[in-house]
Image (cartoon, rainbow, N blue to C red):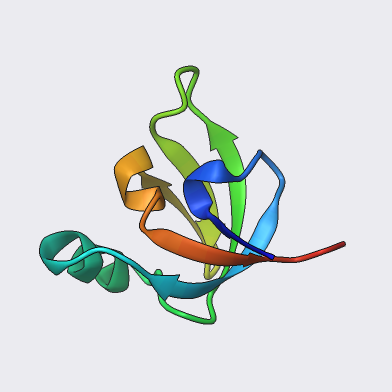
Amino acid sequence: MEKKLNEFVPGEKGVVRRIEGEGKIRRRLFDMGVTPGAEIMLRKLAPLGDPVEVNLRGYELTLRKSEASCVIMEVNNA
């Protein structure tokens, strides 16, 4: 099942399928290691839902909600 990273709940994991969006946001995500095939776990959400903190490739990364909405994930059914 596919869903956007900004729709995840804390503790949910998935694999990046594709990055939507254009230009600077897309390039920024690729530069931070958010690439197709990477496994991401949502660690926590800020009180108002922005930003979100994820575990990616062995490090913690904080993304704006607008950036997370560009990341299409394949949800792991555990």
